[in-house]
Image (cartoon, rainbow, N blue to C red; front, top):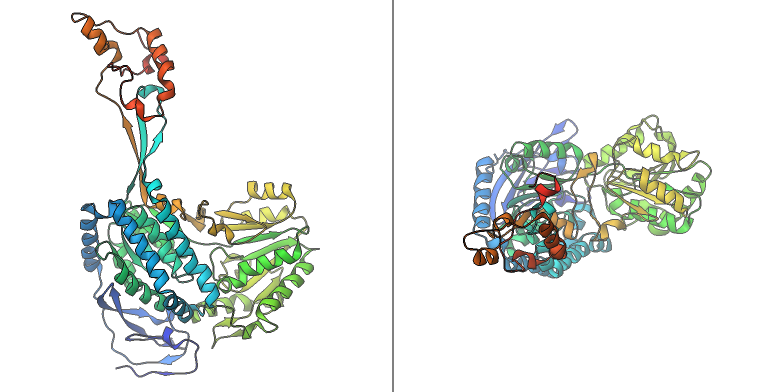
Length: 572
């Protein structure tokens, strides 16, 4: 039995969830005991409470040992593999039914989803709808519309060496896949990859983030209600459960999170040569030219920094680079927009998400309070630990070797760095690990071309921020330390598919043995084609190489000898 005493804090449900109670004291970390569920199968786990709780609590409790270990995970994977091997998930009908279930679930449970997101992150209702619910609705709708086309084998051109033949690329499901999602957009970043995995015909395990427990619990319950439990399973938990899952042999692991854990996931996957998609992050820059429409640019920057989950977005603007001369005007414009959206005192605004927990709050405060940084604040800087809030904060020309310019900020702090010439910003960006996104605001087409050609990043937007992820025809993914692989739209389908190469030829035999027609006329003797005849046939039928008709003999004759030896000068 736990005895808990706590001061005021904003979201007690983050510390007390179901049967769980957490304690974080000034002298150490206590244990968080929580009943987890695999769909509707419960098990218990002990989790470091520092991941959950932002209040100071004192607690006494008996530790409950986790019963979800590697053996339990193996049973789970074997169950899903049996389902996959039965062929159930490969059918078009099954895929469509599960995608329709996701759409139905989001439509019917919209209110509960918004409530869970508010409980975990204080996400305003409109932001929750636009950044989480609408994204999932759009993705499922697109998959339902395009799935049949995605599944059709794609015809491929054949080579002279294989003439006559036809070829195609078949998209086949990988098998049993693991999706490990993150906490900052805990609903959409869980379901977006699942939509791709289902569309591709896989069986799926979802491990949602324990740092967003309300959304994690809701996902477990809703997917258990709406989805096929023989092929789609949710495992809640923390480090122990994730470790148990990573010990298993998967056909694909899709991870969204930080680079440190991404390395752990990749190392675990390497033991079984399991392919991975890693959606990580990085320091996403925004370069601002002096020739921009300042009012429009500042609004779009504020939207990409503070309106979007209060800076807790992997593609959010991490820092700005502009010229020394233009920096004061830009700061003035940004402050004006912040006050317009959040009021004269942004700390009182209800239109901003809070910092996820006390750990990340302390991390951000440490970035601000570093000796060589604290005197660089030109706007904001207020903080309230009891509410997990830090005001939108602008800093000017912090040292490039400071922590705030070395680490991904992932919060409402915005350094502005100045250069003499805008082109100097390219080198500053490229000195750092490649970011997930890079942004440029400029009315100069030459600068735009140079930016696209010379700046390395997973993706880009010119004269806006973040909106590139809303375009399903664009791949979303990182490069280098910001990740590997991509998804969204058909790229999600491709991320969970193997592109199988298939070449079709007949048993017609070797052209030098003569055709069936020749053999019928000359039963005792087969006269081979000459090189000249080969070339005539090739020219006559080369237009059909890319068509299905080349699977059969157009002359109803047995020909199949490639021209390759003659092209290489080795034919007789």
